[in-house]
Image (cartoon, rainbow over all chains, first blue to last red; front, top):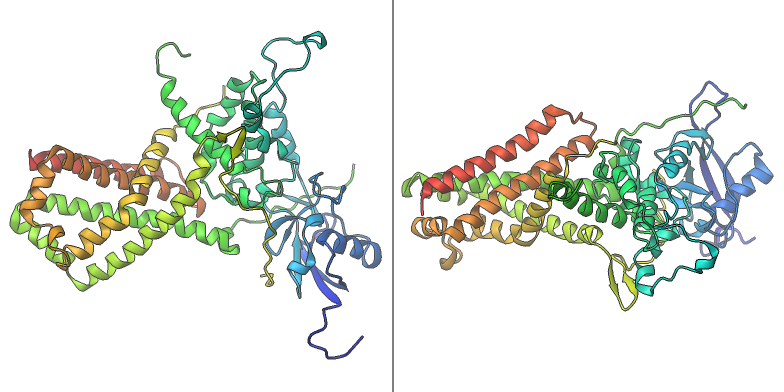
Length: 253
Length: 119
Length: 118
């Protein structure tokens, strides 16, 4: 390895991790490791190297390694990222600081308590509420490309929660339904096969629904699947605002 | 069941931690100046209702160096408001579907936002 | 039954004021705060007779009312939410302070514009 060659690529990089051990009386602390570095390494690979070779106690979630399972969300230098799709070369020469997703309680190291998200997921009724009972004999339900276009991007959500880590309103008030779940709710409301909009809108119209959003827009910036949750939430603000007046019209409940 | 004791990180100073949030707070801060300008105009209307002498007093006050400097600042603030308004406004619009495809409010592909400092 | 939020009317006023100020704000500030007082543009001199005639004209009156009132409602709503962002409690007192001031500005503007006559 040539010494003192300023033009040679770095061979090592320092990773700083905010660690937290619930069994220890101390709060979170930073621990740093310097690891071998190649330009193709992801943040997830860095964490796996540390766990495999240097410190087996480092705890983090991961699964598919290809940005579809939504497990490996972490803060990299203060910005929410998927660890498997975020490359050390974009942060070189480092150090690279990795923390658990913001706005969630830390369970241990990089693992957050996602219970709030999972509970709310059930509340939005994330399934097609059929307009009328259909059987196999009725055949497939047909949908035009235009009908598909209305909801398709919102169906790409992988529940990675990066948008929640980006959303300061969720951080300030976890009662907020939040960007990702509003996008998913909107996906079903916008589906031509669905008849469950009225029940879902009750959640949307509430203070914990869209009215906690202040259009920061960071959620859509960090979303790895271009779901554009800010659009889902703010479209529903317009709809909710109009409905606030429309409910006084005769003929409506 | 394993021992659990979750740690909740404080939100103090949250908006100072990321340039995106700082720009958001700057956007929100423009509201103060919008109200100040509304009050300046209201003062002008009140002076207008009080006659020519009162109105020309108001106009002369606007010609003072402090007032002109403040209005130059106001123009910059309103320009930032205009820019930020049109950035966020498409998010409130329902989808525009053209020829079977939905037009995205944002055409930019997501890319990681690298920052070589980690403060 | 989950309680419905009462933010919508304030949000719509906020949006209207935001759009108006985004489109016209910088230009209005330039005219009223720089061009007219410094006499840069004779056509925009804002002389008493010209401005009075504008304020007496129904369309001009409506324009002035819209600008003053909607700018105030826009600012009030955003400031209210920014208090929340800064960790300041946003109960009834904050609501009255923010939206109350916008209402006062609106009422005063209406009163003054009507007093100016037609």
